[in-house]
Image (cartoon, rainbow, N blue to C red; front, side, top):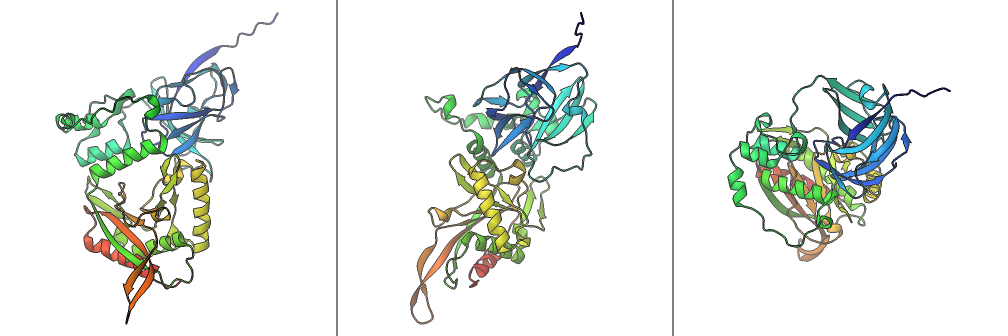
Length: 409
């Protein structure tokens, strides 16, 4: 009688870093169950991190023997996620490498992860349904910190490598940076009051949690100043595509004053003026504020911009927007006037330096040549980072926006 001597091993797959040092992710749904056999790159589960829902593909071909968390639970980066039963010597994602300059095909979701084997670390870039790229090297020290923590360290002139990491799996926290800067005691003196009766269901998740972090970073990092004005659009023939006109006007404002389409690094300090306008559009959803990005809007026609807007709004509200579609923006538009409100103080999120808020259209009494007249106007609120943008630069930008909006077509 033939005996099967196939040797198997159990391998634990930990939740990878899903992008930019994020410390955790919430499981939206499992696409597999215990006992299932999966193939390499087969989607295993969908998770929500920051403002996107992404799929995590299997790094192995084998049998799933254990799932460590349920849908709706939050898992810390680096904590066990799945147990695999694998034939000895089975291929895995970490051994499949492609050149560093390889890029994902359009429409493919990307997950960035870390998988460890023996004393080596693999930086694994998993593309759902596609190839992977990896960076394989010997054992070495790595500094792990979220983007907000890195920004805080730069502002306080703290070298992350000198910080004592107290977070899970060697993650450097805000308190670690403050301790290195001798600011821990000051932080402890200003403890927020306790809210009674909170449960796990009350915790902010997904977009709302990401918004809390972004706004806290904005408050702590940016020297904000806001100027207000109105654009007279009485000359428009009909109301037309208001958002499309606002986008065109932002491009005109950047031409008048390029300094507002820039990224700022306080560690330098340094400001890099960007050639292309990658515009973040704040979209209100039931899950919170999500900000997809329209790339290089200055090179697109009005028809292309409108088609792109329609597409990202639908996919954002369906939570189908991809993580890479919310990155690398250079300027932000908040068109809150589609709901209510005239003026606001929209907040700049580093490393960008400006955001334009547009309020609800108003019919205002203005001074005509010989008598008062009633004109339709758009209220505008421009917030800028006064550390690197002067008042004159902000005013020149806003004047360029207003001049473009005042054109009949």
